[in-house]
Image 1 (cartoon, rainbow, N blue to C red):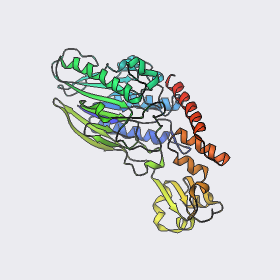
Image 2 (cartoon, rainbow, N blue to C red):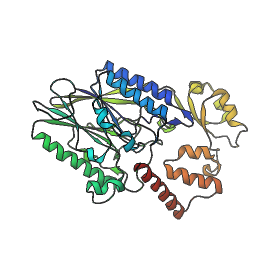
Image 3 (cartoon, rainbow, N blue to C red):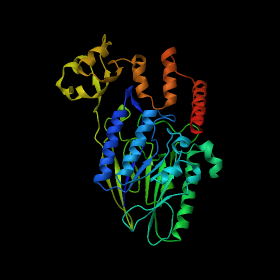
Length: 399
């Protein structure tokens, strides 16, 4: 069997105000082509299918089209929800969709309900155990787990990401042990979380408010392959634990990423091979820095003329009409910042530059506060803002 590990589609997301629906449609075209050309049996989507809990009608239509085309190309689909998704809405009609080969795992109650595929007949089968005659591939889904909403349901000791993820993996292992009594079992686990050792990007929403964000890698020991979602850079934490990353760049911090996924080959002995697959980027990202005269005149920057650009000017004095001048050569300059040579950066940096460098929602709020009143948030103000953001996240997660 051949599986394709993807995640973090973020359908409906924009890039610094530029709509990305057509770029996402282009990714779907590439995905379907890979499924056909590489004879992919199962497409895995490890969370953050949508960019927000209430996606637009055109965004829902794009996912609908993608699922129809993938199943039409001969693949089954297994997906779970991420912190950007509404698990309830994404999981709607899951039993009906399962009949068409789309398997949703968005609820805690489904942790020990894997999608089962017989390995020995060379292709995917049904989703019930049935008569076991050979090895079986069991695909489990761990959706994004909001600790305070699911800790009691999972029997976790404390409402932290570590404890709820540990409880979830223990529940899966118990079910695997039951399956193993009937014959060999190979396990694939989808999990939307921040695993220790992963390298983050600016475009991921912070998971640490309300609990310890990162979970240790050894929680996934013993599984044949763990398909992670949440971090947008494709990376290998261990041979059996990997992030596929997002299919498109969603922040300038991802300018150096090579976007793609992982093809996972499974035979009767387990995971036989894992190979990369790459997605073609619709636009190049350029992160430029220097004086405006050099940026406008040097041939060194010719390659960036058709790119989305983030530019930081280092002129000692802020040039007049800087954005207008830069866009005569770099028409798609989306972010402009100032870092004058020899000056204190924090006093001179524009709000748009601060916003582009913010690491999470709390940093954005504190940055705005500092911008409008000229001083940083104190500890009590940061705590109040964190509490408000925390409540908003809980409300989103419970929808």
